Length: 204
Image 1 (tube, rainbow, N blue to C red):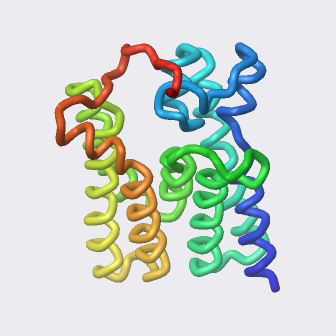
Image 2: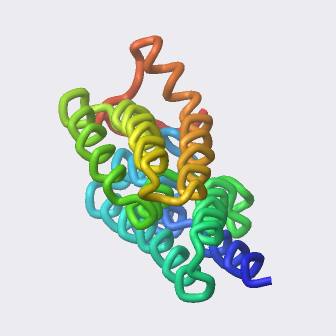
């Protein structure tokens, strides 16, 4: 029952639509009507500007950390933390409060991953942030960083330093992030992916 409790609580925390709330409060708009149609920080940056995007980052990271903190305090087992982390990511992507139309789950998943396997998170951050700085494409850095995180997690779990449950979280979380970036992948392959600094256009 405790496992079910933390999974449900984590989903509900993850489902808090940070970008949607910030968009409404900042400019009275639905963030999903612009740019990528998602509620994440990248779309907030293009649509609302850096101030609003920073607020979305804080809220998305915060709800991920809160979900994993509650799970740690209530259960404290790697299995529960992995399941709760996945639930929070699913909640962000398909939020019950916002018609099941949310973001891509990157910041929520990343904040939880930092707690579950911080060495792999550090490596992935360095690679991903470096790519974003060079290419000015957030999606490229996220996708490559996600792959690096998976490789690093496999290595650390195989050495016995982390529970296999952490690897399960990493595999499923990486798959979720990749699937949610399918439109970005198509644009990357076509050479038409949007770069940082390009304004968002209304969704048609």
